[in-house]
Amino acid sequence: MSMGKVAKNTLYLLSGSVGQKILAVVYFAIVARRLGVVGTGQYFTALSFTTIFSIFVDLGLANVLIREVARAPAKAEKLLANVLGIKIMLAALTVLVVFAIASLLQYSPIIMTLIALASAVMVIDAIHLVFYGTMRGFQNLRYEAVGVMSGQAITILFGMVFLFLRLPVEFLIVALFCGSLWNVIWSGTMLYQKFGVRPHIAFDRQLVKFFASVTVPFALAGIFSRVYSYIDTVMLSKLVGDTAVGLYSAAYKITFAFQFLPMAFAAAMYPAMSEYAAHNRAKLAELYVMVQKYLLLIVLPLSTGIFVLARQIILLMYGPLYLGATLTLQIIIFSLIFAFLYWPSGSLLNAADRQKQNTFVMGLTMVVNIIINALLIPKFGTIGAAVS
Image (cartoon, rainbow, N blue to C red; front, side, top):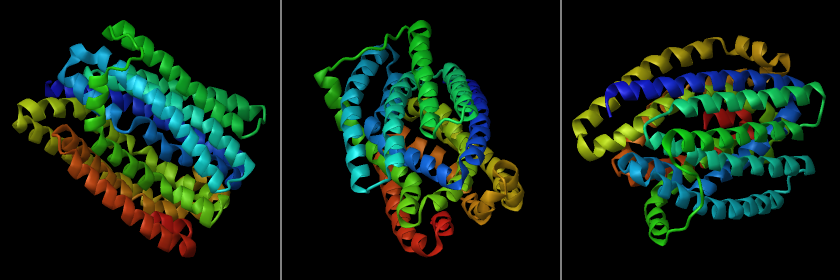
């Protein structure tokens, strides 16, 4: 795979991600203004809760699928069919676990309803994740870029209609479901028409064993990453309340919106890294260093600018009710620097069959994060979560 193709794939995914994130941030700002701090907190709690468990529907299968399709494109259909078969079983078990744990945590009826709807979105997302993953294995991200942007537009269209009709917050999750369903239809159709891969379900004993043997480090890394990313919201909701989650989500959404940049670079690099790791270590090192330099040039002025303009950004996007999120944003925005540097490093380790080292780093990060959250949230609320 040439550097030019890496650049083209990066441009495709960046273009789609930029459009998708801009739409998502604007939409969330409208939702936050419409729902108020408490309603936003309930909405964000339900989504964060199910997002933590969504990794159990995947367990690293998508990453392994991308790597194996990149190495053997002729086996793509067979690999995808078995991954889909495994995912159906994992999805059923995960939904049961989500409801069991949500019940143990004694969430309010409205949050339980939101979690139920978000679980359906979680399952649908798991399907188009592997469809797009197969395309990434073919080192073509064009159709994924179109899909993620159009899916976000569909979510916003339905969401705005529901908001205009003043329907309950549950319908905003329904809007997410509509966007996710479109991604399944689009990605499945493109996969068949453009790549000749027919999505279906299969259970090949040898392939199932293979995936079970190689996905463990990826699965653990995914679990650690999801828990690390969203446990602060769950802990805030139980230790402080929905209002704190509403304020925190305002700062978190702004910060998270920019993580598409390193994620897009990493996604575009990963198939090439998998190829270079097997055949050309010099090119692997060259690609990694180049991307790290570009990401540093982007993230340093970006995080500094948002720190300086945090109050104005909060006022512009959410209004005066959310001014309490200003300091939280000023703290959490500097986590972007480390996020930008991590994504290419994690991709490099996974592509070079060093996923165990990556998993150890993520596990350690998760444990430290939970401990610091437990110490700081009860005393400092959203500021404690931002610091951790």
